[in-house]
Image (cartoon, rainbow, N blue to C red; front, side, top):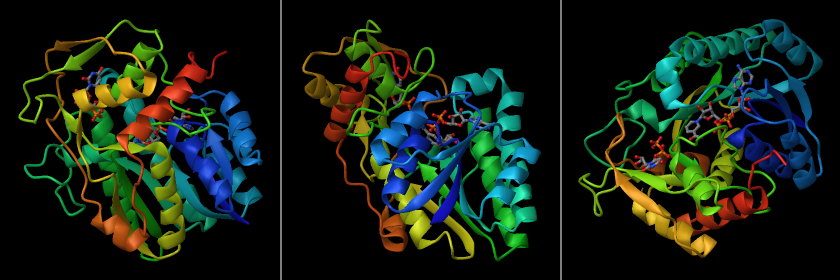
Length: 339
Ligand code: NAD
Ligand code: UDP
């Protein structure tokens, strides 16, 4: 039984990945401080997978707790999801973002080194690419032109891990750059449960559809895209979860720095997403066109060849599927994990 430490495993992407890991024969051990997730998630993972993962409630910056976990278990790899992720909040609270995301990753890397655990998979983001001039974005594109503390924290961790791997070439470190994760497990039992007003498009649309919010603000319809609204590479969270399984199987035991985009290779506009969601929920989504949101880029989608070749992984779910599964989750759980 291959034990994998999953930091942030109670969160949106972590919970889906734990379910898929159990299915694939791995044993996740979760460390999460519940800063942005609920204890209920563990029960839902257990219901879906038939296995309740061992759960440590605590902080990735807590060196003693990490020591304890690594001494209690023979950990084969670590998947490091834990961190803060709200772009707007990061501008107001940069200290918290660097402390959680950068310092937290360094503590983890240090305790791994002391414990002799040599394999780490890090949740990075397409945001490290900034706004490239050509599409699609492949893994060799320049990184670092980030515009907010959240993005900078991801870039900084990538650079730290790059140096750490270079100094210790027997380590396997994977940097997975996610595009726009959306959707939910098809059971409707787990999904994205943002606290407060959602920052991201899909959860906002879902809350409008379920009647929790009145209408969607579309940030700009004057971009140089087919319909004028922003274009992103939305990826179903189940495909993303499977990308982690593929990474565990293909490269997590091979020394080196492994960098992969996890996207679909296809861009969709805000209006296309609204339309797909209207079809899923069966009624119109009220919206109004608003000014552009500061810091947004016009369009962004991934080159997927490297992941296909080296991980043997490709995203397969459509935006219709993403919308249907988000709607299923949202309509079954109108207030998220809170009853
Ligand atoms: P999430 O907030 O749902 O999950 C993160 C989990 O980490 C939460 O359960 C939270 O309680 C926990 N956590 C936060 N700080 C912690 C700490 N210091 N110690 C222990 N636990 C802590 O977010 P998510 O959407 O699942 O994202 C997972 C990772 O993927 C994050 O690192 C995020 O930056 C990255 N990412 C997410 C997206 C996205 O759009 N969702 C895109 C690109 C990258
Ligand atoms: N967007 C929007 N209204 C919202 C949230 C997002 O029009 O309430 C747009 C945003 O301008 C961008 C796209 O939807 O073009 C995706 O935004 P999101 O915040 O989900 O992801 P990111 O900006 O990280 O790519």
